[in-house]
Structure formats: structure tokens, C-alpha cells
Image (cartoon, rainbow, N blue to C red; front, side, top):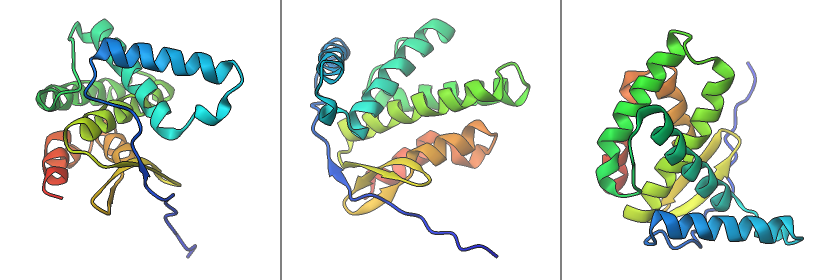
Length: 167
């Protein structure tokens, strides 16, 4: 049997101020993207990527479900319903599997931003996906979203979020 080892980067403190409005965070993201494209690639990091995915998720949810989400904790129950609906669409092949991967990245970014804004913590990356570090505990958001999208109902977002609040 092959060895399996989870390799996790050191937790990085979040550098983005998530208390800002979605419009302010979008402007911040766009400004940083221009600086990166203009020759400052060192500004591109995992947290920046997760914010981009989160903003893409907001736009996708608005387009598909006509729902305006925020990064507030109150979005968690709605996120659970959205993920369940997307999971059903993936499982019934109304959404192709390759689109499921894109949805997983966007939903991971969104949930990560909600966690950072409302619970705190830092950014981590690993060979099994992105996540958050809260008080020394690593939580793999990417895998949780992925398992839920694949139909594992025990991987609901609300219970995951509530467990993270206890850390």
C-alpha cells in the first residue's frame, strides 16, 4: 500500500481587510490584479486567489439563483442550500463534472472569506486543497465543499462552520 502524507504549508496571516464591503473588496481585487499583471507577481498569493474565487462565486450565484449573498455569517444557511442544489445538478449530470471543479474552487473561496471575516484565522494550502487555520487547527475547506458537491450530505457547510466557531 502506498504511503499517504498530507503536506500543509505554514499558515499565513490574512492580509486582506474583510470588513470592507463587497464593492470595496472587488475594487481592491481588481487593483491588485492590475499590479500583478503590470509586473508585480509577488502580490499573487493564495489568499488573493481565494478572494477572486469568492467574488466569482457571488456573481455565479446571482446569475444562476438570483440571490445576492454577502460575506456575513448569515449567508451560511443559504450557502448550504446552494451547495445542495449544485450537488444535485452535478449528480444528475445537469452540470458537467469539469464545471463541478470550477464550482468547488469558487465555493471554497467564498466559504474561506466568510470564515476569515467572521471567525478569523489564516490561509493554508496543501496537497489536498486550500483551507483555513484557526488557532493552530487546519480545516480543509476545499475538501469539505468537494465531498458535499459529490453528494456526501454529512459534509454540510453549516455544521462545519459551527465547529470552526468553537476553535
